[in-house]
Length: 368
Image (cartoon, rainbow, N blue to C red; front, top):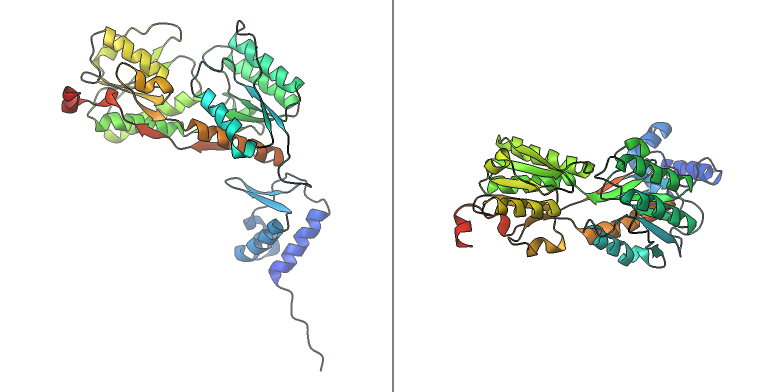
């Protein structure tokens, strides 16, 4: 009597079918692979069965899982190319204090080993808009593989120049990772990943802290023309106030002018400031107007730049993990080069409230 061969497991049939399709060129390198749910529907199999087939394809080096994004078709050759040059398009690098530590994080990232970072120079006498375009052209001329771009803000030309920069970089076929903020137009993303913090949470933490400290007439202070990150911080501020049934006020400064608090601002007993630089201006203006910090008014910033603890009253602020942002940006850049067709991602890191003297209101402040 002849022995019947054992039936081939379903997961193995699925794996072999998909492997033939991958080797046969049905999927392009970098293309997003169908989800396990879609494969289960196609093969009329359970998620567990399909998942085992996909895992074996990953083990064979044909697929790669990217956390938070999905599974992608691996291209030929090693996962990470060596000896790549990357550019920075960050005009007036020293103006916003968070970008220098972010860039140091990019350069010192373990993933940066074997690669190089181009710190190009643009004429300091030129405008920020001209600098951004010049830095983009220099990066293209030097043959970089990708660019870390901090989009412009604070001027009427910012959005148009951001679009020009991205057009240049995309036209040269370069990968782009945005630092801290979007360009302002979702249609311009075209595969640009963003690495920054959860700005809604930053605004929420700052406002919730003031309310916990007894503030009941809070205000939010920002500069006209700031990026979408500030809009998210405002949204977080408003959500924290709404949970407690507290009404807040909004105040907008002109970028180059000294702030002179009006009557409405003088009634506030606490301020969330869009960043630490604005918090410093707020502190200076209120002190000049005779308000005592923190006894009369509490102040919270966002960023935790180096001078935040050195202000006349050390500043309570929400800390951005700048080094970690830089390290993450490098990993994201290499992932983007490996998977150029995957959808654009927002990688938002957590932030931490750092409490200092500027928000110690009430009886505690009398002993400081």
